[in-house]
Length: 271
Image (cartoon, rainbow, N blue to C red; front, side, top):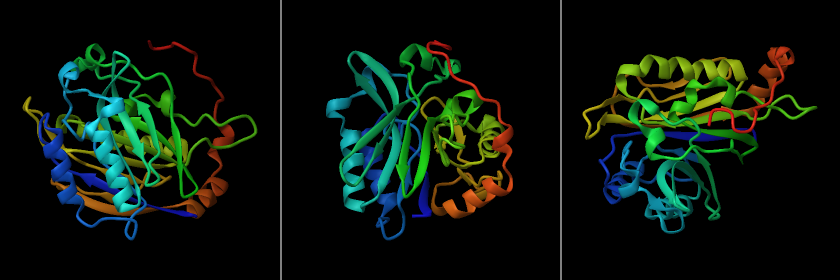
């Protein structure tokens, strides 16, 4: 397939209340299903808000109500759904982006760059690997919030003899309103430098710590031009379409990738 219908879910979140957030999101999603979309994207820590109470709020991976809820939503709506959850596994804690399919398959990415200004690096463990998933012929690199500030981690790393590693970058976030301009700018910059679509979903509202969130969820094309961009800082669900034919044509017409510097990430760097 050459198209990927992607639904951005910009919403407020109930603080540290997974069941309330599950119910709230089900109501927001309504009858949205495979007739309308291929992929539903929820914000970072959609079940709790951006909590640093990892020891109290992280859910065991093998018995997580929020992961079970994602799988149930994927099956009932017959489309992929993704969002991050505070997860505990083997005595460690992760801000884990879960990718759930209608077939019951799970893929996950653990947030690599932990937001030290909120003490996240003291409450969660760092992810060790990048993760690319595939849907409708698109390869999608997964990322979470603060990762967006680190272009080397998100840079195309095509194998020898290949031109591109991925076709879309997905970033879920709880990115506060005072830093909304960097969020918007970085979404577009990552699209331009990697010749890729970028899907960025952020929350709105105010959390229990008094932090306000402006949303600014965007779907950006490979030229850095927004396809979805709401200036109102209110909840919305909107579906946009990624087109692989258009992406491939632009990459061929404007082959900046031919002049890119090759590099590799060294094990343990940044830890």
